[in-house]
Amino acid sequence: MAYQDFPWQPGGSQSFNKLLALSLPALQGKSVLDVGCNAGFFCGWAAFQKASRVKGIDKSPSFIDQARTWFPECSFSCMDWNNLGRERFDVILCLSAIHYAEDQKQMIDLLMSRCNPEGLLVLELGVAEGDAEEFIPVERRITATTTDTRLFPTEPMLRRLLADYSFKYMGRSVSQAGDPTPRHVYHIHHKKPLAVLLLDEHYAGKSSFVEAVIKPGLTRIFRERVYHQIADGELPASPALQNLMVYEPGTRHMIPPRITRAVCKAGLLPELMAVFASLTGKNDAVIEHYIPEEYRLEACELLEQAGFYVVDIALFAARKKPWFTRRPPYARYLSYLEYLKEISTIDEDAYLAANPSVAQAVAEGIMPSGQYHYWHFGKREKRKVK
Image 1 (cartoon, rainbow, N blue to C red):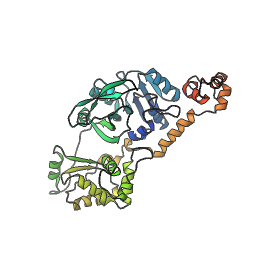
Image 2 (cartoon, rainbow, N blue to C red):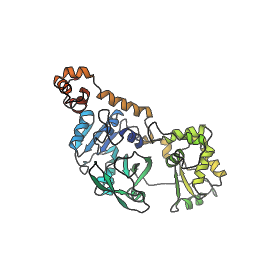
Image 3 (tube, rainbow, N blue to C red):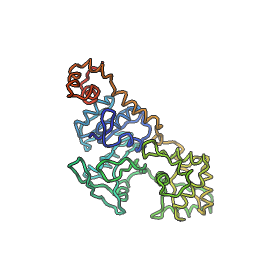
Image 4 (cartoon, helix red, strand yellow):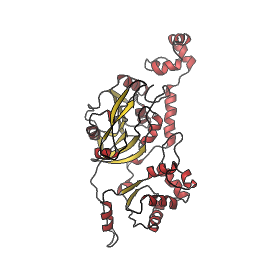
C-alpha cells in the first residue's frame, strides 16, 4: 500500500487527518519546503493555499515522479536532506521523518537554519513514553514480513533537542500503521530574548510573581490537553461542558479557540476555570489558555475567588496577530479534497475512446479501468482524456 492518501490511491498515513492535526497557518504568499515530501500531498495543499513557492524533496525517485505528475505547480527534487542548499523558507515541514536522521539534534538545527527569522518549522514525530532524558529504540513493522528499529525521544529528551528554540505543542497526530509510538505535532520558531515587563505599582505582587515563575517544575496547564481529557471522560465535567469538546468530523482534531468561545457563550466559563483550578493542586501554576478579551476579566476573578493570586500578563505579540496564528477554515480543507478529486477524475468512455490500447487492456482484464490507468500511468504519459 502507498503511504499518502489520494483519490487515486489508498494510503496508510491518513493524509487528510494528518493535515488537520498539523494546524498549519494560512500559507498564501509564503514559501514552503516539505522535507521527505513522499508523493506531494502536503505540497499540493500549500499550492492550493496559493503559497508563493513550494518545494518538496525526497530521496525516492518514484515518490518524486508521482509528485511531479500531480502537482506540476510545485518544485520537486530527488535528493537527500543533507543537501538543502542555502535557500530559506517561511514554513518547513518535517513529518514522520526525523527518526531517520542519524543525529536528530543536528537535523533540527539544519532545518531551523533554513527557516526565515520569522519562519516556522512544523515537526511531526513519535514521542516515546518515559520520564528520563533519552532515546528509546522502537521496533516498527514496515511490511508484513519486515521490521526496523528506530530511536524516538522521550518528552524530556525532545525538550532538550528543542531547547535552543521557541516551540509550542499542538497536539496528537494520527497513528501510523505498524508503528506503536504515538505521533505528536510541534511548531518551532527561532527563539527571541525574553523581556518580561512588570510595571504595576508598589505592593502589586511583582516580587511574588517573579519568585513563582522561576521555580523548577512549575505546573503548566495546556488547553489542548485539558480539552481532550474532558472529551474522553478523563476529567470530571458536566454533560453540557463535555458536549462542547467536539472533534472535527471523523478525526481526533479539535479547534480549541472555537470551543473556548462556545464555552464562554454557553455560560460555562466558571466550570472550565474550576477544572483548571483543580489541576493545579492548589499550587503555583501557569495556565496557557486563550480566553476571548470580553471574558478575560471574568476568568481572572473566578480564579481569584478560588483562592489564587492572579497575574494576568498581556503579550505584546498577541496584539500584532502574527501571520502563523491564522488558520484556514475547516471548509477550506474539505475543498482541497474536492480539488484532488477534480484533477484526477476523467470521463471513462471518452478516455477509452481516445486511447484504444488502454480500451483493449481493459477489455482483456489486464487493466481494471480507464480511470485506474489515468491515475497511475495516463496523466504522467500525457494521454488524451477525450
